[in-house]
Length: 116
Image (cartoon, rainbow, N blue to C red; front, side, top):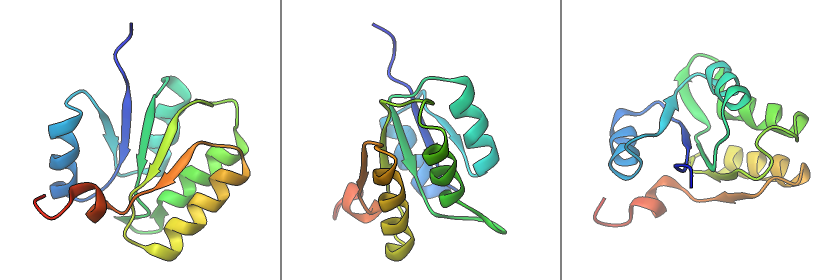
């Protein structure tokens, strides 16, 4: 059985450390264009997607819009929207559901819990 591949689109170092502790072999980027390139080149089991990436106008929504238009790319990949930006996270979730993508919105604070 092949290793499970995880892609994390995130810009905050503390959050990335949390993900690395759970997925040591994950791919990560804070650039939507790089995320899209990785999605085209690799098969992923899971995508953790943040909205606000701290790179000017770059946002996680760029990735979700691209995924919505390219339904054949990683069609079985589970997508977890972990953004704390509630309005944007709901928009991403709605967009991905409209393209029949398996998506779940889990704010990062809910994933970490009270102990981090």
